[in-house]
Length: 205
Image (cartoon, rainbow, N blue to C red; front, top):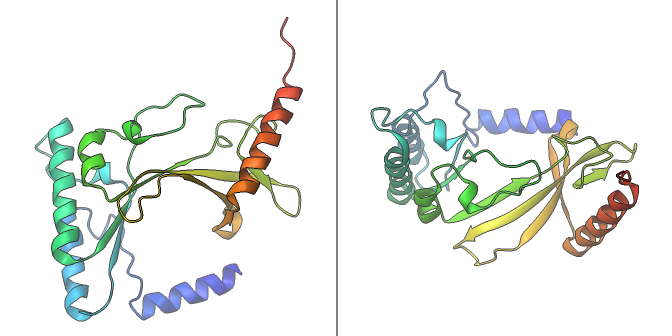
């Protein structure tokens, strides 16, 4: 499956259905917009989606600080999406969270302007990265019994459909694959997992 995925990805790059740039090519929103305009001119009828890795590390407006800079960056990105008729998907940074704290809109660093400008906000959470598999709550097991992360997804904002519930995705990191989990099944397994961890919790003296 991985080899098939690589072949498909390479062909999509050759066909310019996927364009990948890293920080050595350019990092700013201005650079991103120049790319968007280039491919918009080349493919005027195609839908374009721009993926940005870490909004908070964009170098634009470096002369500004703190909230005002994030506010201006957020406005620039919103205007870029609107004027070029594209969708932008970006990761963002959270403030420091507690070990068992699930993220919410207020967890986003300098969050107010981003909350306002974003059309959809989805929070992702898993506790397996800072707990072992015997104490983590959000896990699933593959066919070999290996404990893998189950990702909690919460819609913090959704101006597309209005849905602001939660979903669960099983991550298979070695295959680069997410699989959607039936919500009722996920809730049932979560309750069973919570009960199991409660029963196995060491007694305090």
